[in-house]
Length: 412
Image 1 (cartoon, helix red, strand yellow):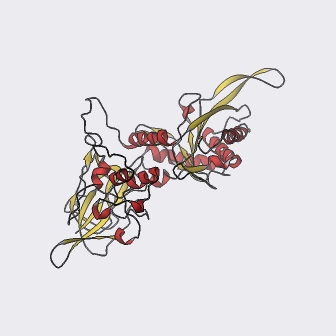
Image 2: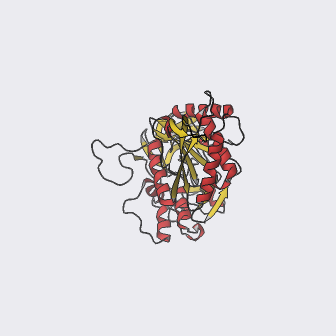
Image 3: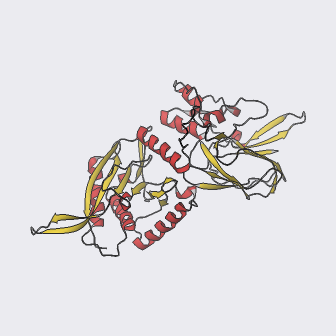
């Protein structure tokens, strides 16, 4: 008998929501066939079967929030060596999600956990992230979870911070009692996730992108010292066929070339900054489900027409919810073109580990005075640049903005 637990799908999240099942108990499935779809922070991911065999039981129903590491499927496998590729499976030390059970000569159940042989500390992703934030050495923490797995409560105990009286879904999943037969957390429904209190009759539980936005904004609030710089780009020399989004992307490339420190990641705990040679820009896309930010890769030096094709493709995939997790992660800069809807200036929010985001406001024809003293109406673009002032100076931000404006003010 083998079990499949929900893996960390590469986003470091504590949970995911079951969208739909493709299999039922009694079905025979082949390795890499789709088993179920889950919704992570911003993407719907099809999870394939890691084994071929008969589905003995499924755990959870559509709409349930399932903690990372919680039991999803039990298999009677065709072959003990059968193993497939699980979507999102990452080469990290969190190798506790695929557990094989067998019987020894006495009939007792034993556990073969691949992570016991990795030589790394086993910890759930939420505990690993918390340890990094608090500056705690995981090798010095005694895990109390199954197989000495380090849990969130273990990190809180090590930091002498009291654990909350009502655990989150992730904490409940990793604090199950240890026994000969490994236990797993039951999936939590939306109504039961988080603090156990009754929602108002008209209250809506946050899900998917809106839930992810709440988490990202809380992360930014706790970890970023944001400062916003405002200015305008004069577009009087633009031709009628200029595309706003692709021109903005090109201008971001010019800004990063002038000041590479804004195309970077910052680790506030370790006090380290990593600048990037490639520029991968997350572009905010407004959808009925909430804000989703797919990533345009390697924008530097690319023709605007090519950038436009990438934008159109990712926007279409985002609106259809077919964008993949790989297309949402590891951005190095952020762009918000909110002016396509309304608003001239804003204070965009930086999401760590990135250090900057550029916002583009609504274009308008403003009255300007020319060098010759005459008055003209020019098309202008309001710009709002928020940067993390812990690692970006005001001078660096201003030089970045100046380079962006110079590029935008070119006729083509």
